[in-house]
Image (cartoon, rainbow, N blue to C red; front, side):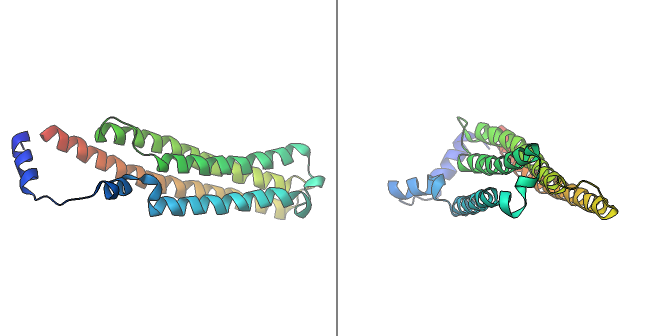
Length: 187
């Protein structure tokens, strides 16, 4: 399709008047309902993890566990909070390039990086929590080994599921990016 043909089709498509305020509302990423849900989820999870950190010392006998495991548990909860904040930051401002193709390319790379951070931080955090809860045991009974195996299976399943979810998301964005490149090459 030649550029002149494209321009004439655009001009003949009809003109609907859209106010500047409506355009600004449409372009405002912060008002998007999905971002509102992400903010709400971030707030709820943050409060839950902060409450967990406030009470774990008494409820889960943190004072009986080694200091290193206490620090590791605080680190894992902080890791999850940072993971959530990074996720919000990635989705909050998807436009970074000078044009749509460049912006989508940058967003795709950010999404790939965030997917790696997401999967590894969750696996690490759950592994640390498992280690924390098992750290107070002096003698490991066969049931404890069975618990470790169950935790390892759960962690593996979670990692595989998260990998599939992120692969699907990245593939969707990548296919849109490829379509956009193909379309821009035809013009």
